Image (tube, rainbow over the protein chains, first blue to last red):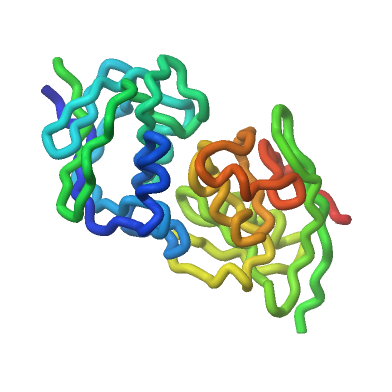
Length: 122
Length: 123
């Protein structure tokens, strides 16, 4: 198994539940402007390599979800900004260029200290 | 006192919204680039034409009420709505349309998308 990306949540914005209610988790790296922090889960990126693609696995505190679709700018966002729009919409093609899609599942609770990992089985 | 000039920003191919006319003022001087990798060329171009000050939002923040225009490279969910919600005119380099939980705040007079360098012209 290859770890493509790993991070730890450091801060959770007060409007994050609004996004969770619509089945999405919006992450940003620690350099994000203050005004974005209200909406976002801020995480410290510890490791990044390679490009995320369908078939990879996103794990949140050990809850694993298969990546179904990756939007055209999602990898750029992830690598440049630590920005990830994780959507539990079950889409096999991303609606929006920033989306990373997983099955329609109930998203796990995110707390400060939550571990995010994206992996590929070899 | 800086002498500010207005620019007109049209949507690009497949884009949405606009056109926006942007003219910085001494109270709202910043061309705020909220993009990966420093000041985006679109923000630099707007700053050059208007006399506004290009500013990298990922280096530090400015209050909403000092931002003349925000330039984003948003994939369509979060940044696309954050600045329009605060009535800050917003330019997305990607050809996105309003979506996400903040879509209700996004109007054609606050957002223009798919913008290329050619779409920015003196007003």
